[in-house]
Image: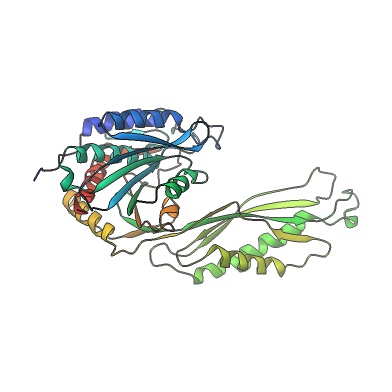
Length: 386
C-alpha cells in the first residue's frame, strides 16, 4: 500500500501567495473584478496535475465554476471538495495583494477562503500520487458568488447530482463544523402620505410608523428568540440592518424601508419565521399608515449534518492521524455554501484553515502550516472513505 506523502509546504506558500494576490472581489461588491482571473489560475494548476477540468457557466459570459474530478476506487463514494473563488471588498491591510510574514500569508481572501482552496488543490495533488483503489473519487469545485447569493453552489448542485458527500472550505481553524445557521433577508416597507413639513399634521410620517416596527422587533420579537436553542449553533438572531426614507428635509416622508437579516437555526423553517414576522406587523396599528413585508431577497437553509455521519467519522479519523486529536463536531454562527448541499441530500462538513475572526477583517491572514495540515486531513479523509 502506498503511503500518503506530506503536503509540500513550499508549494503551498507559493500557491497562497499566488491566489491571494489575484483580485477576486465579487462584482456585486464595490464593482469588484469577480472570479475570472482566479478561475483561470485554478484551472491551470489543476490541469498541471493531469486532471480533466471543466467550466460551468453560472452568469454569462464569464462567471464560471471550475470543476476537476479524480476517479477513485470503483463503488466508492463521490466526495466533493468545494471552495468559493470570490471575496468581500478590500479594506485596511486586506488588499488585493499578498504579504508573507513568517508563517502567515496576509491579504483579502487569505482565510475566506483561498486557504481552503489551496488546501484542496494540494490534497488533489497528494491523492493523485497514490493508486485509485486507495481513495474514493474526489471532485474539486471552485465556485463563484458565495459572498452575495451562492449562485455558484446552487448551480453546481442543480446540474451535478451525483455527489454523495461534500466538504465545504471555510475558515474553521481545522474544526469539523456540522451545523450552521441559515439566512433570511427581507425588507419591510411603511407607507404614509406626504405633506409640507411646516404642517406635519396634514401627512402621515412613514419614518415614525417604521419606528414602531423597529421598537417591536427590538423589544418584543428579538427577546423571544432566546427561547429557541440549537445545541451547536445557539439561538437565532435578527438584525435591523439598513433603513432609508424621505425625499427632503421639508417634506413629511411618505415611505420608509427597513432591511432585516434573520439568522435561522436548524429546525426552523423560513415559512414559519415569516409568519411570525407578519403577525408582529399586523399587530402594529398606525392610523393612516400601511406596513408590509416584502418577498425575501435571500433564503438559505441551515446546515445540520448528524455528528455520527460516516463523513464526520472519516474526517475525525484523518484529523487524529494528522493532529493527534479527532476533535468534536462543532457549529458555526455564519452561513456557507453548505446551505445548498444539505437540502439537496448531500451531507456535508464545513472545514478549513484560518479563523472566522480574520474573515472580512482589515487584516486577513491564513497560516501556511495550518493550510498544509488541512490538505493532509482532506487527502486522508478520501482514503478513509474507501
